Amino acid sequence: MHLTGKEELINIIKQKIQQEGAISFKDFMEMALYYPNLGYYTSEKEKIGGLGDFYTSSELDPAFGNLLAKQFNEIYENYFKNQKFQIVEIGSGKGYLAYDVLSYIKNNYPNLYKILEFISVEKSPYHRDYQKKLLKDFDNISFHEDLTEINNINGIIYSNELFDALPVHLIRKINGKIFEVYITLEGDDIKEVLKEPQKDILQYLKDLNIDISEGMTTEINLYAKDLIQEIGNKLEKGFVFTIDYGYPSKELYKPYRMRGTLLCYYKHTYNENFYQNVGLQDITSHVNFSALVYYGKKSKLYFLGFTDQAHFLISLGLMDIFQELQEKGDYKSYERLNRLKTLILPKGMGEKFKILIQSKNIQNPDIAGLKNLPYESDRYKIEV
Ligand SMILES: C[S@@+](CC[C@H](N)C(=O)[O-])C[C@H]1O[C@@H](n2cnc3c(N)ncnc32)[C@H](O)[C@@H]1O
Image (cartoon, rainbow, N blue to C red; front, side):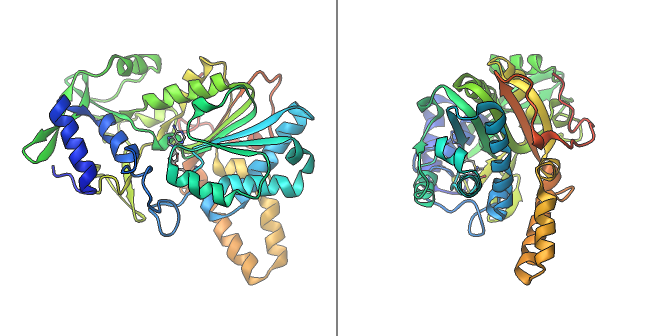
């Protein structure tokens, strides 16, 4: 296989293989996405939005962020009134979701806005610069590169499409045995080779009771396991909202996903060739929400609920916004109404995006976003 994309980055990857021998797929993916100044996320390139490679909900319409703000205010009123309250967004990208959340709080909940401290954690320097400009008019906001920089959070920690962007290990089952996919050089090209998996991978499969089918290739996200535990450790009291695409373990590893869920996004098209456009295309995988629940418990995160974007937004009042727009009846309102529909389309964003909600040190947690839940099939049932 031939690596194409950023020559400088490709040469660095090849040098690493020459020096160290075969590297794991996870190391390759990490370099392709996050190598300083050259990786997909760490370089100066438009990624999200019309001129980028993919859209996220926050780019479509402010309603998503506005309804999230409504949910956060309910939590503030019920569990934190007049006490320290922080909202942390991790992997905040260009800052559009934070903008919609903060604008809505500023305009509708002045008591919360006065007390609120907003903390943005974003690894990409390009995205951090972008959001610093976008969010410059809000008070009491700070920008960080890494979660290790913050401590003792009281309030909310949330993310949108963060976990799907973490580098993953690739595994394959051959003759009943699990192997890990590595990459080595073959002349000027590369080829995949199979090696013994890291011990942590086998432990993960055991912890979550995962038995994949013969011949299946799939992903194991050990970073997600560590990150959810770190989030739990950073949270003193409050809630964690994880918004992303994915499934519970039982659904994610079903035999009809024989090639796993790893996909690349490039200029609004997707492909399965991880070795092309290196440093220029996004590589993502579906999130294993059972893993976030299982490992979250190790840092005292209590599983509160698992729903999808459509049910979550409708529970929080999306239909009221529909009605208001319909009543206005002008061209702009209809245009927005159409856009908003895409947020809740079954088989589309409404069903694809899930929301996992965990809490810590909250007595009798109960939140509006979980009022209407989807039917509990394997796609929604988290075994705890
Ligand atoms: C797919 S983008 C989503 C951006 C944004 N949340 C949105 O919805 O548009 C993932 C973002 O997470 C960031 N990221 C990845 N790992 C991170 C980490 N460990 N800490 C903070 N940010 C991270 C990436 O740099 C990237 O900006």
